[in-house]
Length: 137
Image 1 (tube, rainbow, N blue to C red):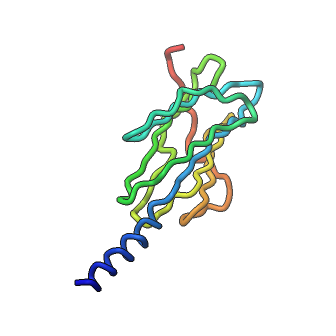
Image 2 (image 1 turned 30 degrees about the vertical axis):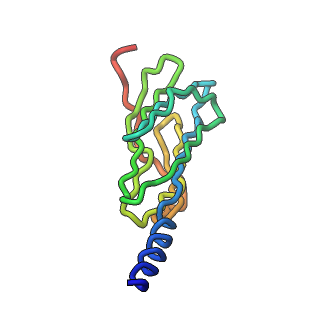
């Protein structure tokens, strides 16, 4: 019984190592002094809305959960009239051993770009989403 207790203790310490931090960053690389409106949420948290000036970014760090289900959704709107927008998954764990690491998003004139650092690296910034246009101003 003592060996089982030791095993459970060591195993739990090992598993806690897999509950680690994740982070995503959203940068404003728009032109003509356009502001970027950002609002993000998960099951437990709401971030924003925030306004990001050109050339700056917003970093969000958090603890990813043990079950591998941490997910953040974001809405970006391109100023000054916020007519262009996009809703997307800004961070997602793929399974329990995925530590998440950094999802680096950049808002540019022609769309929204991602460079993911971690287990499934892309290695370079690549376009993921186009901007959508709202009829409501």
